[in-house]
Length: 163
Image (cartoon, rainbow, N blue to C red; front, side):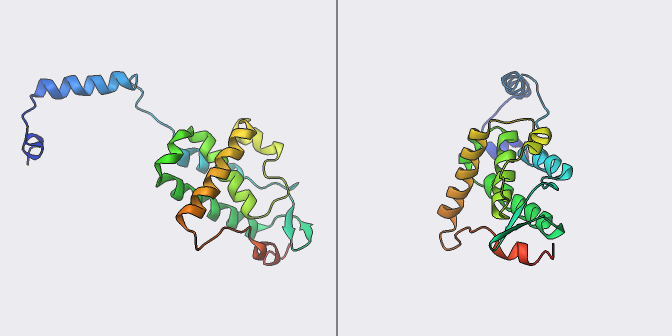
C-alpha cells in the first residue's frame, strides 16, 4: 500500500523531498543522537560504585559488594525505562537524566554519598543541583504512577551482601 493511499492525500515525490529537507534543516543535519540509555550504559560500564563508598546496613556502614552493584544496575534500568515512558522527562538533556537516574539508584541502595566526586570523572561534572532536581522528579513521578509501591531504600541489600 502506498503512503498517499494511507494518508488519503496526494503528495508528490518533490513534496516528500522538500519536507525531508525541511526536517533535516530543522535538526541541522545532525542525524546522530546520544540517548539517555547510551549515557547510562557508558556510566554503568565505567562503574558507579567505588571502594570508598559506604552503604547503610541497618545501623552501620559497610563497603559495597557485588550484590550492591547488581541492585544499582537493576534500579538504574527500571528508572530508565520508567523515564522513557513519560514526556515530562524530555525537559532534561540525555546526560543529565542519566546522571539523575544514577543518583536515584545510588539513593535506593543506601549509599552514604549520593554523588561522590569520583562520579564527576565518569559523568563530566554535571551541576549537582540539576541532578538532584532530576532525581527528585524521578521519585515524584514514581510515587504518582505507582502509589501502592512507595519507594524505600533497600534495607535487605546490605544484609544480603555478605560484605
